Length: 447
Image 1 (tube, helix red, strand yellow):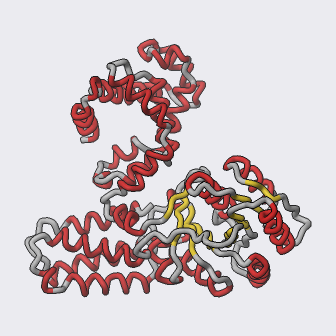
Image 2 (cartoon, rainbow, N blue to C red; image 1 turned 90 degrees about the vertical axis):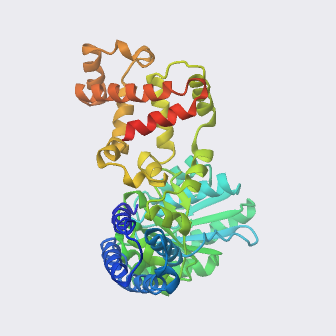
Image 3 (cartoon, helix red, strand yellow; image 1 turned 180 degrees about the vertical axis):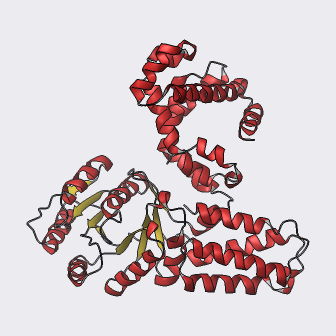
């Protein structure tokens, strides 16, 4: 997310670093570039105008103009303004009511609503230690109810069964009654979506809202629709008292216009970001952390949280112990390494949160793509256990068999072995816990 905007802003603000002072001239030139970057990111025009005007007012203050570090000063101003536009602080889910706390999910068809229900259920169960029931009031989309039932099983949530022959309001009423009888903490209600906003849809969801009286009404919207996401959210808010937004498919959105437009145009906070198709792919929206990512400064806090919650601590400890003792790093370890990266959202997600990664050469970023990781895993899975333990055995005929079994070419297998050898050399530097040598090896790899 924000890849294009991040590149543009990093370049624009970086140009100021070599200049001695901020002047009205270089501020004007910089703001013109910032404005173009925001418009290309599909940020709504009223938001861009307000954003630029605020930065201009702050950047032309006497104290700022006398600053000895113009680049850093303007970056700080832009950062503060990004945070302000997106909402200042993380707005948590409000569950302070007599159980069950009802959360109603609304949105257009294809926005990722049903998947978001499952993601939110998992987040509430694992992070908030809540008991959660989910129910589908979508009686129009084929297999919508079955999809939610499957996802509920995956995330260990209670599922209230419904039928496509039933009325949505009846389903909602019965689910609420069942949630009370089973002493459930939170009831998540999935509603029907449409390809566009229509009177029938709004009337139906208003009726559901009336019988449930939810404490939270969340609008689920596809971030890839850009500023249209904010317009749709505004239309829903006119019909429903929305309390927040879940922005989905952010891993596929290189622009980020929706995140920068929604709060300003709807006055409703983004509460969560959907970051992948996995049910683990949901993270609370922190404006300060997102602003840091946009400016290429990474998001260390979120990265640390993901390592603590998503990384298999036992596997990590076993590998660390093995490397510390100087035992070889083999292809089985490399496979585990790739799988753990996948559990944390993929290499793209990790690089997005690591400070300084925006400045890496493009060929390095391409090498680290998630598609490449999946290909590497497919090839390793086509190897025997002996080949994973002793990679030197992999010669001509074995390479051809591995390539055929993984749907790749022999040159892909050769590339995997070369990449493994490079990683193996880096890992050898960790012998005896010498972290300084390990970091030096990683640095030399990416230069």
